[in-house]
Amino acid sequence: MTVCATEMTTTAPLAVTADGAYAARLAGEGEARYPERWTLGGPEPYAVPLPLSQPEEADSEVLPLADGRVLIHRRVAGRHAFALLYPSGTWTGPRSPGADAGPCTGQLQLGGVDAEEGLRVRLLPPSPDGAAAYALAVGHGETTVWQVAGHGSDGPRRAAVLPGRCSGGVWLDRSGRLLSLDREQDGRVKAVAVDLARGGVVTPLLQIAEDSDDRLLMAAPDSGLLLIRSDAPGEPRLGWGVLGSARPVRFPECLRLDDAHPFAVQPGQVLMPETCGVALRVGGSGLALWRPADRYVFRLGAPAGWLGTGLWTPEGRLRLPYATPEVPCGIVSLSQPAAPPPPVHLDPPPKPPTRPVPLQQAPLG
Image (cartoon, rainbow, N blue to C red; front, side, top):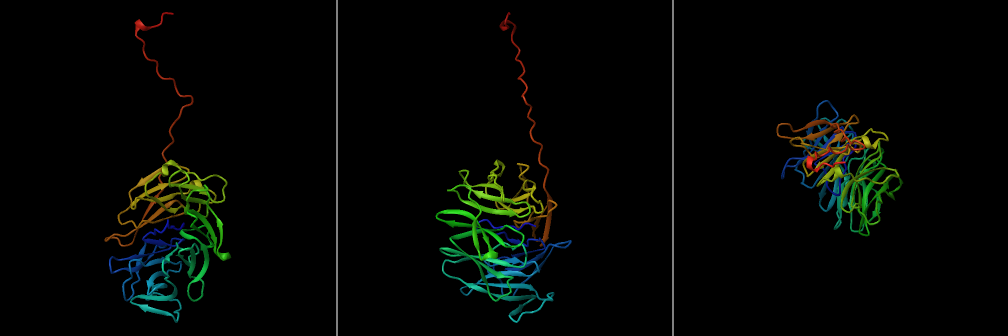
């Protein structure tokens, strides 16, 4: 599955693992919020609440891991703290000496990062390998990528440090090595690739025009399809390109949609970017489907209680999670509609019918 990525600093209410097996969200309302893990890999989806002895703050973040545990990021006593949560009644793995337990929930503390003045910390989308988790810490003049889970040592580990302020966060490969960030420097925003296996080596990724802001929104590693937002055409537009291709980025007219954000790309289309289904969230709660080969956008009604995200299967089915009072954990599955036939153009076009001429005006020779 292709991971739903963040655009700027906006995150979906439900985070889904790269393989689509688990998801997590902060459920509840007001002062009664608690983490909730969704299991999506079985025949029927179901949710498991992970409450502790006190409710979570509304600005806490959660992220599912491939083993079923849920990472939580909290602001606690001047620190950004991280912990792993799991159902204590069914958990059969080893208990760490640093683990404590709440009602029905086990918790493993992972340490934290000091909350310096002006520092903004948020979780990055789930890593493709499902075992590691990363956070982005944006300061006044530099950005740090922290690995906060999955490295086997105590406390968060610096994975990369970049000059400038970064946003976004898109994985470019299946191993969780290459991460794209949108870096702001000298008044311009350009997407760069960060190699986490080489200590954070940075290389340019998008350079559509010298004076344009070029952000990467999503990537499909199998096909190389990239979804981009850039003002190179004269205004911010959605466009698409292919990773490593010499062809320019294209900005289809059909993607001129107000407040549109791609949230899922069809995986498994090896070297066939034009065939990838793309799902877009439009206007906050609207839904649209698009494929580069079709040059047409299908506007659809979103299911009641839709959580604003989803994932494609390699076979082309879009799975949309939703929650309502009647169905607290549900999935709606859709297929990419067939594109309308192209208009018929006759070449050369037929001559217009001859206008009848009154007899008194008819030529006489």
